[in-house]
Figure (tube, rainbow, N blue to C red):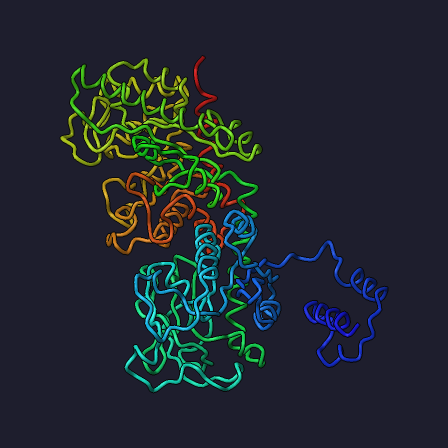
Length: 614
């Protein structure tokens, strides 16, 4: 009977009904408990709080355990904590992770040093191999989906190991400076040593301080910070006390136990949990938005991957685009480009280019057919709506380089029937259609006579004209000649980063007047002069600038993945939801984001297809 009473009181504690002192005098009453539940916990109008997953430790009998201080801290911060049982069944973990809005990785045992390619030293403590697997798989599944993560103690170490960093296996024996005691005997509410926080780090923004006193309950610690992460704080003896991947990945880890301080009433440390809950709320909003909009990436070179033995778009391969990654990033549709480099322009070579494009398009159909339970070819805007409603991904087709139509203009109609929705007029060299923006001899001074007929035929067939890669004179010729809106399927803003592939303000304004759309491209040298520093934040600035110059109705998104695209913070289709989070943080409305992600492009496609002459 005493055990039952205790269990009921624990439930009441987690529901925040009573204080601990009040519970001691409560007499169990089932009817009153149910009445209280109905009157206080059933509110259909209540805002649902973000769901925060909490990693667990493994008990001696194989169970899962989490100290209540973690749960209490998340509750105080306004989150819904969910303890994730320790397991190695990845498919179950993946299903759990799909529903999370945030993740807190908790403390625990030592990490097996084999995961960072070191042999164990004698001073290592207990290792739990199952916990190691569980933590690493959980982290991968969560970060593949870009779920915001806070790592605490072992959780910080797990993050560092998961992303390629190393640890001190035992600080007392491996670190020379002994001035800080990292295993205190005082309670967790008490700070025992000072930590210096890097100015302008995300950590300093969270806490509003550059120095804090923290508790310490560890003998391992971060040694080499993982690639993609930055040092955010150090102890007085030089030990790393915090790492972060901000601003382009929502991951932060601290070596101390902020939940212990929160239990003692520390409001500064509560900011950690309010921060992860706030990040989770933004992520939750982004996920909800993606359920109701059409998100389209208008350019990828994934068909170039098809030549790899055994490649399958239905599997999570190492390339940047496949159906599992699209599902993780909540991307509804993508344009696969059938690409051919510019070659010789004699009849034989031109026909070889046509045959190559034909083969690539058939390869796209083959890959989709092999995975027709999870994706379909989309020909029209209505197809996209139907495919999304069927919980599948839509694959559109484009041709990159008009060289691929050869010298026979009738190939436009033939490829249209095979699913082609746009043709990029040229690539990096002049061709029979027009001059390029790159390696040009200004052969035609814009469109060639054949190119002018190509423009007219694309209008007749209802195929979108893509001016990415063309020279500026070609652009103006197309704008003047086309009776339908045009697109730049993967270009960025020249005013922010000079490159011949980017568009000037006048070009973007003309494209808007034409009713077309510029799809901002995630290629490093298009968004930042320093390619090594090119990040998603840069791409967002290009989107923002294009919106201000051209208008919200004339801007979209393209990755150029599997063909040179990819930035820090957005390096695969699974990362595309990060764009939505950044736009939300910039203050874009749901309607604005829907336009940028797909509505603008779909408007152009529908207009062009409607204008086709039967």
